[in-house]
Length: 193
Image 1: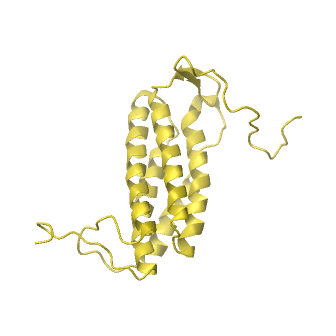
Image 2 (image 1 turned 180 degrees about the vertical axis):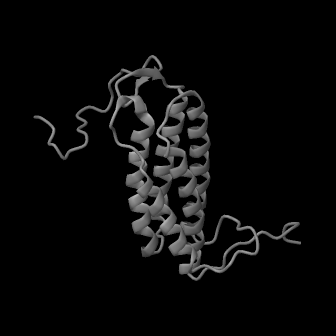
Image 3 (image 1 turned 90 degrees about the vertical axis):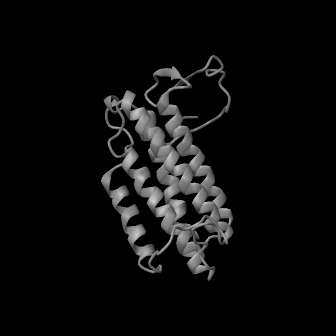
Protein backbone atom coordinates (compact mmCIF):
# COMPACT_ATOMS: atom_id res chain seq x y z
CA UNK A 1 0.00 0.00 0.00
CA UNK A 2 1.36 3.43 -0.95
CA UNK A 3 2.16 5.98 1.74
CA UNK A 4 -0.46 8.72 2.21
CA UNK A 5 0.58 12.23 1.21
CA UNK A 6 0.44 13.51 4.82
CA UNK A 7 2.27 10.44 6.18
CA UNK A 8 5.93 11.48 6.64
CA UNK A 9 7.32 7.96 6.81
CA UNK A 10 6.20 4.36 6.85
CA UNK A 11 8.42 1.77 8.47
CA UNK A 12 7.41 -1.79 7.76
CA UNK A 13 10.72 -3.27 8.84
CA UNK A 14 13.05 -1.79 11.44
CA UNK A 15 16.32 -3.52 10.54
CA UNK A 16 17.71 -3.35 7.00
CA UNK A 17 21.24 -4.76 7.45
CA UNK A 18 22.39 -1.84 5.31
CA UNK A 19 24.53 -0.42 8.11
CA UNK A 20 26.26 -3.62 9.15
CA UNK A 21 29.49 -2.57 7.44
CA UNK A 22 29.64 0.79 9.24
CA UNK A 23 27.94 2.86 6.55
CA UNK A 24 24.54 4.56 6.57
CA UNK A 25 22.47 6.79 4.31
CA UNK A 26 21.98 10.49 4.69
CA UNK A 27 18.58 11.98 3.97
CA UNK A 28 19.50 12.49 0.31
CA UNK A 29 20.39 8.81 -0.12
CA UNK A 30 24.17 9.28 -0.17
CA UNK A 31 26.16 6.72 1.84
CA UNK A 32 28.59 7.85 4.53
CA UNK A 33 30.51 6.35 7.43
CA UNK A 34 28.61 6.04 10.69
CA UNK A 35 31.52 8.01 12.15
CA UNK A 36 30.69 11.04 9.96
CA UNK A 37 30.44 14.19 12.09
CA UNK A 38 26.96 14.91 10.76
CA UNK A 39 25.79 11.63 12.27
CA UNK A 40 27.41 12.56 15.57
CA UNK A 41 25.45 15.82 15.48
CA UNK A 42 22.04 14.44 14.61
CA UNK A 43 22.61 11.40 16.81
CA UNK A 44 23.07 13.74 19.76
CA UNK A 45 19.96 15.67 18.69
CA UNK A 46 18.13 12.33 18.88
CA UNK A 47 19.62 11.75 22.35
CA UNK A 48 18.42 15.22 23.37
CA UNK A 49 14.92 14.35 22.17
CA UNK A 50 14.97 11.21 24.32
CA UNK A 51 16.15 13.22 27.34
CA UNK A 52 13.25 15.64 26.79
CA UNK A 53 10.93 12.63 26.79
CA UNK A 54 12.28 11.72 30.23
CA UNK A 55 11.79 15.35 31.34
CA UNK A 56 8.16 15.14 30.23
CA UNK A 57 7.49 12.04 32.34
CA UNK A 58 9.12 13.83 35.31
CA UNK A 59 5.85 15.83 35.41
CA UNK A 60 6.92 19.41 34.69
CA UNK A 61 4.35 22.17 35.21
CA UNK A 62 1.68 22.33 32.50
CA UNK A 63 3.01 25.62 31.11
CA UNK A 64 6.31 23.88 30.32
CA UNK A 65 4.84 20.62 28.95
CA UNK A 66 3.50 22.21 25.76
CA UNK A 67 6.81 23.90 24.99
CA UNK A 68 8.72 20.64 25.45
CA UNK A 69 6.30 18.69 23.24
CA UNK A 70 6.68 21.30 20.49
CA UNK A 71 10.47 21.27 20.81
CA UNK A 72 10.52 17.47 20.51
CA UNK A 73 8.84 17.81 17.10
CA UNK A 74 11.21 20.60 16.09
CA UNK A 75 14.17 18.38 16.97
CA UNK A 76 12.99 15.92 14.31
CA UNK A 77 13.05 18.84 11.86
CA UNK A 78 16.57 19.68 13.03
CA UNK A 79 17.67 16.07 12.57
CA UNK A 80 16.30 16.17 9.04
CA UNK A 81 18.14 19.42 8.39
CA UNK A 82 21.44 17.93 9.60
CA UNK A 83 20.96 14.70 7.62
CA UNK A 84 20.39 16.30 4.22
CA UNK A 85 23.14 18.38 2.58
CA UNK A 86 21.89 21.85 1.58
CA UNK A 87 22.96 21.10 -2.00
CA UNK A 88 20.13 18.52 -2.12
CA UNK A 89 17.69 21.39 -2.62
CA UNK A 90 14.51 22.30 -0.82
CA UNK A 91 14.17 20.02 2.18
CA UNK A 92 13.04 20.42 5.74
CA UNK A 93 15.25 23.13 7.26
CA UNK A 94 15.38 25.05 10.51
CA UNK A 95 14.12 28.52 9.70
CA UNK A 96 14.30 31.81 11.59
CA UNK A 97 10.71 31.68 12.96
CA UNK A 98 11.64 28.55 14.98
CA UNK A 99 14.61 30.38 16.51
CA UNK A 100 12.43 33.43 17.16
CA UNK A 101 9.85 31.30 18.97
CA UNK A 102 12.56 29.88 21.26
CA UNK A 103 13.61 33.44 22.11
CA UNK A 104 9.98 34.41 22.81
CA UNK A 105 9.57 31.40 25.11
CA UNK A 106 12.82 32.27 26.86
CA UNK A 107 11.69 35.86 27.43
CA UNK A 108 8.19 34.81 28.57
CA UNK A 109 9.37 32.32 31.19
CA UNK A 110 12.36 34.41 32.30
CA UNK A 111 10.13 37.45 32.97
CA UNK A 112 8.54 35.58 35.89
CA UNK A 113 11.82 34.48 37.48
CA UNK A 114 13.85 36.28 40.13
CA UNK A 115 17.05 37.93 38.98
CA UNK A 116 20.04 35.62 39.17
CA UNK A 117 22.71 36.62 41.66
CA UNK A 118 24.56 33.30 41.74
CA UNK A 119 25.20 30.30 39.51
CA UNK A 120 22.42 27.72 39.49
CA UNK A 121 23.18 24.14 40.47
CA UNK A 122 21.26 21.43 38.60
CA UNK A 123 18.54 20.09 40.86
CA UNK A 124 15.40 21.00 42.69
CA UNK A 125 12.43 19.12 41.31
CA UNK A 126 12.89 15.99 39.18
CA UNK A 127 11.63 17.93 36.14
CA UNK A 128 14.11 20.78 36.72
CA UNK A 129 16.99 18.36 37.20
CA UNK A 130 16.08 16.54 33.98
CA UNK A 131 15.84 19.84 32.10
CA UNK A 132 19.38 20.63 33.23
CA UNK A 133 20.50 17.25 31.83
CA UNK A 134 18.74 18.17 28.57
CA UNK A 135 20.53 21.53 28.56
CA UNK A 136 23.94 19.86 28.78
CA UNK A 137 23.09 17.37 26.02
CA UNK A 138 21.87 20.30 23.91
CA UNK A 139 25.20 22.09 24.38
CA UNK A 140 27.02 18.94 23.25
CA UNK A 141 24.76 18.69 20.18
CA UNK A 142 25.62 22.31 19.39
CA UNK A 143 29.38 21.64 19.65
CA UNK A 144 29.06 18.56 17.45
CA UNK A 145 27.05 20.53 14.90
CA UNK A 146 29.73 23.22 14.83
CA UNK A 147 32.44 20.55 14.33
CA UNK A 148 30.43 18.99 11.50
CA UNK A 149 30.00 22.42 9.91
CA UNK A 150 33.80 22.74 9.66
CA UNK A 151 33.85 19.75 7.29
CA UNK A 152 30.41 19.80 5.65
CA UNK A 153 27.94 22.33 4.42
CA UNK A 154 25.05 22.42 6.91
CA UNK A 155 21.87 24.42 7.21
CA UNK A 156 22.89 27.86 8.50
CA UNK A 157 20.49 27.91 11.47
CA UNK A 158 21.06 24.42 12.89
CA UNK A 159 23.68 25.50 15.44
CA UNK A 160 21.81 28.75 16.15
CA UNK A 161 18.67 26.77 17.01
CA UNK A 162 20.64 24.56 19.43
CA UNK A 163 22.31 27.57 21.03
CA UNK A 164 18.95 29.21 21.67
CA UNK A 165 17.37 25.95 22.81
CA UNK A 166 20.05 25.44 25.47
CA UNK A 167 19.26 28.92 26.80
CA UNK A 168 15.56 28.04 26.89
CA UNK A 169 16.20 24.75 28.67
CA UNK A 170 18.14 26.63 31.37
CA UNK A 171 15.24 29.05 31.82
CA UNK A 172 12.69 26.20 31.83
CA UNK A 173 14.65 24.35 34.52
CA UNK A 174 14.52 27.47 36.68
CA UNK A 175 10.82 27.92 35.87
CA UNK A 176 10.06 24.29 36.76
CA UNK A 177 11.45 24.89 40.24
CA UNK A 178 9.72 28.26 40.63
CA UNK A 179 6.31 26.98 39.46
CA UNK A 180 6.59 24.05 41.87
CA UNK A 181 7.48 26.38 44.76
CA UNK A 182 10.87 24.70 45.12
CA UNK A 183 13.91 26.71 46.18
CA UNK A 184 16.50 26.89 43.45
CA UNK A 185 19.82 25.25 44.30
CA UNK A 186 22.49 27.95 44.06
CA UNK A 187 26.27 27.73 43.99
CA UNK A 188 28.06 28.73 47.16
CA UNK A 189 31.76 29.59 46.78
CA UNK A 190 33.87 27.04 48.59
CA UNK A 191 31.08 24.48 48.74
CA UNK A 192 28.86 24.09 51.77
CA UNK A 193 31.22 25.41 54.45
